[in-house]
Image (cartoon, rainbow over all chains, first blue to last red):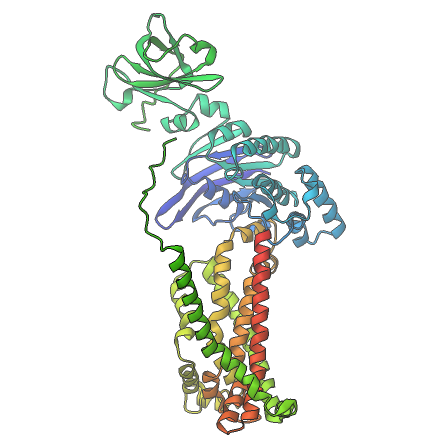
Length: 329
Length: 288
């Protein structure tokens, strides 16, 4: 099922949450809406679901206009950040809900619930109440509940945002595997770039109610169209070129694109190590350049063996970006 | 990690253990004496007085036709008033808790109005509107509809006085639950009606039941407003509290106290029901 959003705008009071947003999601793809809070990513997802009505613009689902369709007619599965499980129903009843309101025969419901419990590996939890489950288990139940009606589109609003790091990682790869098996069109909202890169085929970077860039994780990471996208997708150093004060002459460098050695190199900048943090496989080195600017370099631990705080070093960079048309981040 | 600053050593001085015990008993003693004088003794006295003429006197008083009629009328008026207030209270609570609309705060204040208006004034307001010389009086008379000095008036007065109970009790529960569960139900294909019956209503069932009990207790015991609108016609528009008053004023203490015992029993049953509902709800909450 394809999703098409056409010039959608949405305003909450004086706040413009979506500003003429257009987006195409191809059938069967897994798309991440990535952006900081207030960028409009959740609103866009809720407009697609029909939980918000856009002030302007149109939404199409599978080539059919759905702007005026009610939520319950859109056949979408929606997963909320805080699970939104029915607190007064047991796990099995939660999962069965979508089937029961559609008057699916009882025997079919029972079978489907069992299959879904197995899918989310909570076979023994059918008669538990949501409050008796951990956060990760609740979100799995919420997923099973959404999947029960076999929606062609699955929308997830910060599905792992309320979970701790370990469970989050597990559920992420689980979602990826699930999508690869079931092939439904999936759109999820996140503010975590790592999550977006790990799970999605395509990342839609949003900022201030607009789409800043769309592309595969590699595209948006390697070829960001703006300083914002570059800095949102990963750590970045901003260097002022020595010959100019104008903001046009800023250079953007990924910390892992810096080469740091302790013997002099042609074209290298002379610098001094200010601080070293050891992170296991990587070492983060804070460096003061000759003109006083501070940059951070991320080096594999093996390459950083000879470095010490206060040491004189030589810095080069593999690749850097400039954004002449942008004046500031 | 930054060390938290040390806590100040000189906190407020607590009284020594001896003076604390002394103060505790003083407070408890005061409360017990106060409750005995104001609540316990008067309630007990009713029972003593009602059975002064033995069980026989009590039973005779309770089989007296005007009494039976008053009891029946009270139960019927309370049942209808509670039903109407349940529908209104749920609608108002859902509207206020789940929706933003102009006049929302005004509606909250209006719902609270009956708490601050004297029931007698409430009754008068109804008489002035629906009575013979009221605004709607001529029209009602023309259509042979009797509101004042009749059951509709009694129900209206009871509804007026008990209006805030259900809306007020259910609103915080709805607000606490938020709207995400309802949204989830809609995305799963439920109609708004199914969503209300299967998601919203069950999620507030305990606070609803609690408020029903309170509302019913108040509805059965209402005196002032009903006294004004009903006309207190024996065997016709006399409710139980009015019957008690009439019997008392007419020096028929046996009838007055017997009826009062019945009202008190209804109150006790309500109290016990309320207590258990509160406990069940508390237990459910903990296990969730």
